[in-house]
Image 1 (cartoon, one colour):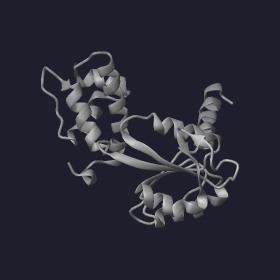
Image 2 (tube, rainbow, N blue to C red):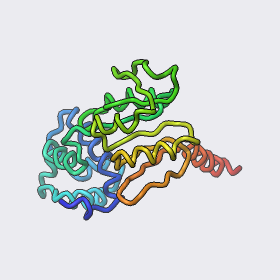
Image 3 (cartoon, rainbow, N blue to C red):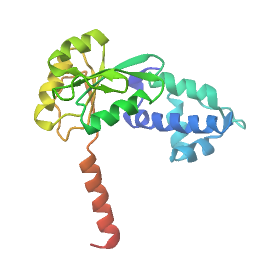
Length: 211
C-alpha cells in the first residue's frame, strides 16, 4: 500500500480503528463485522469499509474481519511496526505529563530524550529519563536518530526550537504551542491547541442554551 494513496481523512481515522480493534481483542472477540467495528469506532459502516479498502482489507462476506489480522494491517499502515524515537522539548507540567503518557503509549514509539532550558528542570528524572539541556538539542536528536519531536514550550521560543529540530533532521512535530509553526516542505506538523478546543466547546454550549 502506498501511503500517498490514502486520503488524509482516512489516515486520521486509522488510530481510532486501531483502538477499537484493541478493545474488541481485549474482550475476546476474534472476528468482527463492519457494523460492530464501526460502532466501536464511532463512524458509519460504509465509511469504515471504504477506509479499510485502502489497506487492501475487504473482509469476508458473511464472516467479517479477522480482528488480529486487521490489527496487524492497521498497525503496519500507521508505521507502528518499528521503534520511532521521540524527543520531547519542554518539560513543564504538560511536558512532564506527555513524557509519561508517550512512555506508556505502547508499540511503535519510544521516548528517547527529554529537553528543557530551565536549569531547575535539567538533571531531574521524568519517565525514567534525565532531562537534558536545550543547548545540546542538535546533538541529542542526532544521537537518538529521532525523526519525531513533541513541542510543549512557551510560544516565544517555539519557532526557534522548531527550526533547530528541523535542521537536525526531525521531520514530524507534534506541537502543543498556540502558534502556527513555519516548516519547509517534507516536514509534518500536528497541532493540539487546548485553548482553541475549549473555545469551540464554549461556542456550542452557548448555542445549546440560546445565549
